[in-house]
View (spheres, rainbow, N blue to C red):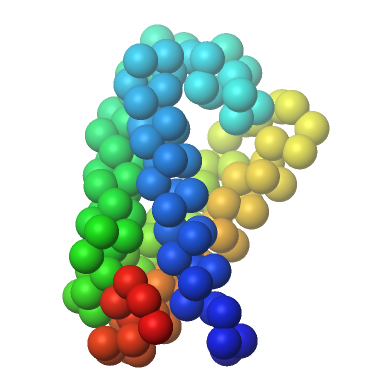
Amino acid sequence: MPDDAPRLLREWNRGMIAFDLILGSATLLAPRATLKVLGHERPSADAEALFRRCGPIWLTFAAAHAVAAARGKRRDWWALAWLRGTELLTDTVWAATSPAFTRPGARAAMYGAGVANAGMALGFGWLSDRGRKARKGP
């Protein structure tokens, strides 16, 4: 890995705090509008309710990213790697099976989310293996 990889991973992690905070909040407060941004057609009431239940999940992700950013302990990065690993196929399965993704590029973006989760799982796992060097500074 390049010498600046730990710094880049920590910066990416900080960005994910904001991303998951926005996604989780928007999903709870405005699920229909959030689905529209994702390229999903107007959802049925039950689909909207099922999507809304993902809000607290994404807020949990934001909290996990925040803990890793604040403490930076090996176990924090390891837990974050595992948490991101749980999301490897969720967006891919959704994109592959939902007929409601109709906006051009929406399915590709969802597949990309799976790739991003794989990269984060590997990257944060690598940080956890760096032991003391994985902490906030070099």
